[in-house]
Amino acid sequence: MSTLTATPGQTIGPFFGYALPFERGNELVPPGSAGAIQLHGVVTDGAGAPVPDALLEIWQADAYGVVPTATGSLRRDVWTFTGWGRASTDADGHYSFTTIKPAAVSHDSAPFFAIAVFARGLLNRLFTRAYVPGDRLAKDRLLSALPADRRHTLIALPDEHGLRFDIQLQGDDETVFLRFPGHQR
Image (cartoon, rainbow, N blue to C red; front, top):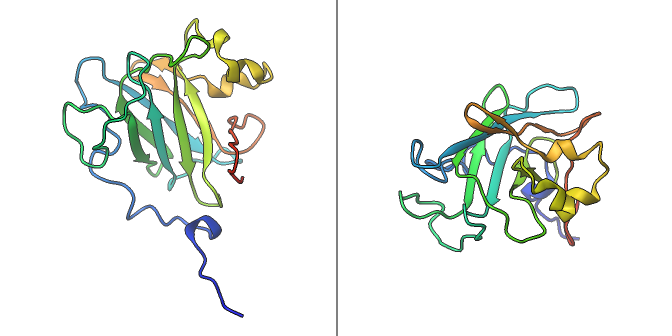
């Protein structure tokens, strides 16, 4: 009988703290550029304690609702918007991205950031969305399909820096997480 080596998706990590972050990975656009905002928040566990070693990835449409197909996410320049970024949490569980507000990609959706969460204790990443507040929220099919008392966990809140989106991994006010075909949770 052969022994198989465990992979990161099958063992408790974190494995990503030293290898996956890259220079300016959280800057989808340069700070201070026209239209730049911060998407930021805190990742907490079921007891409400900050998670200091989580890694978040975001994907988003641009300001016109176009999903970017440009390459270059790992080597940032000042003119190519790839719509993808990666940020780790600090000791207080806080993360931050410098980006732009996305527009809706279709007539029956609201603008959102797609988010993947990697963290200790998670055997597989979690998927969620951070919706941009506004009048299009009622048109979004996914958001409308959720129970009304759970929708708020997917809506970012405007603040002086841009948008705040806290992620609670478990508990009474757990963030709604999505499951895709072939994705194991």
